[in-house]
Length: 340
Image (cartoon, rainbow, N blue to C red; front, side, top):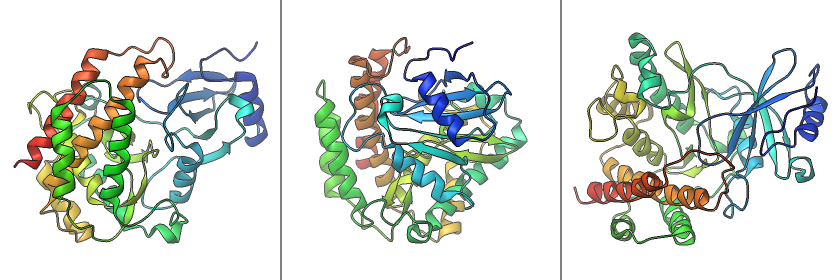
């Protein structure tokens, strides 16, 4: 029996590499692309004893400068091991592109659901949903309290001028992937630059902190996933992003968000708990919520273009018109918060 063919995986080479890094691994290995995520590709890997691992690699084809850095993501997760921020244990990083045509890393599998949408979240017992919101914000507060230098992440990026750097980065991405004009994007870009608040301190910023990037269980976050956008900077960017994703039941057109299932704490509860845990002032949080929508519009446009050129692999089911419309809706949401 041979390792089966899966797009993005040179099965024989990867199996050989894993066997060198994992004691007792029994071939052949089974690879499967895990559903969810529009950027780095994530695979489950199962050996003949039923041991399960997770492999991460960049998307197929050309990617933008500095994006999808496997070494960086591996470094972050490894550095956070043993902290109050739960992460999967890393096994190893392969930077030799002759093995799999791109760098990749392997980590332990953490069991539990990922709450991608309201349907999955509704299957979680109500009592666990109530507890989970508290732990989600506690983990974020813990991440922001970590001194990057003490865990070896002080060189992850510049600590100062986070918002300026982000505006520059995602404006550049927008220009590199623009396929159509979005007036609300142009106006919100201008206002974000004009109204930028002062950054207080510097923290590890996850960059994509939401329930859809967490493995959960028993009312707890068991592992925070998808660290590819992590950097150093303004902690309130993570808070604004989380608040935007924390949708109440029946709120607008966002009823697919996990928290739309109900039973979770409110945005106000999240904000108050975070402020109490960190001592941070959230009076300018609407700016950060606007920034979050704006950045997601830029990211969404990059995803939209990657699907157009086929960089996300074959047979990936996506509604291109909905993806394109989502970019406009995000830009308009950003502008609305800036005009409040």
